[in-house]
Length: 373
Image 1 (spheres, rainbow, N blue to C red):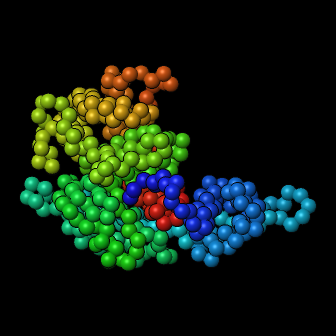
Image 2: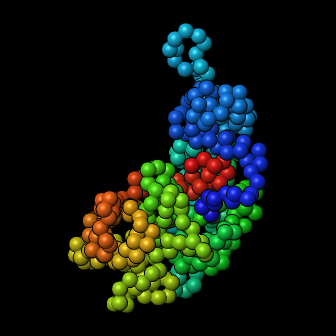
Image 3: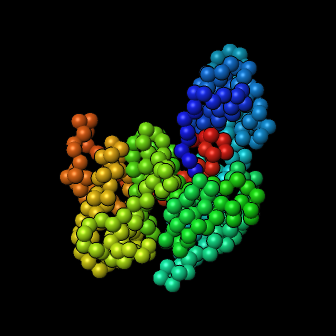
């Protein structure tokens, strides 16, 4: 999914565009404030009470908003009638393909609660050329979709690898995929809107939803592989070829290193992926593993942080593995970057790392379909 684009000054803005924006603002305001009166919503959005009543009526008719009783009596006169988001009309299906051995899909409501979760195992052997069968993903989506208690807005899929603007996975070494038309496969099978994005981009969107004050950051997603999502000026960076953040297959160091699933040696994920970290911790001194992995990550991130003047580095993955990396990465970056006059670079763990790709994929569908952040 592309980051929201700036509107060209020469482009015409139609009345329908303004109405769609106002409808999105109503939904976003209700998500932020909870049950609210029409008068309160009108003040927050900046429209008249009559216009707000019309907007709310349309959202109620679409099943996005519902009546929520009356406000507590606080003086003379009739108490205000409240409205709130209707979770039944704001469901999505989210899919996480970041761990090939544990493909996940869930029905998610607008609060991020997972109403139903399914897991499928899929064997992959990149040495023999056997990748994950895309049909397994389609079957998983169909199975989860059948459990949804109400119609869903769309399907969001977070996948490793490079995803183009059409939702095709151009390359994903950890899944054994090259030019898999994932969007078309799932859309044809379900008849629903489908959004395919890189798993690290999905995780980044989930972090932004949890930390709205973060505007310039790189989130490093450590799982079966390593990827990152980049936010600059509050907007996710996509890149010319939709491959921004593909750092897992960047070679770090000059000591060759171990073979990687992509066919090369010494890629970052050979030092830092969850399987590599667990295996190394079992076989070596944990302090050495943490130091080597953390410093290699700092080497990969330093040019990115400097070029974009980022203020935060966020690590997402198993906390027990990543927490010891935080001070090592912070020290490694400090050695390689000029100090900022506004304070040190923040290196921290993700706010809510559990199910971060699923929650991010669901959030991206809400943005794509309704403009709700």
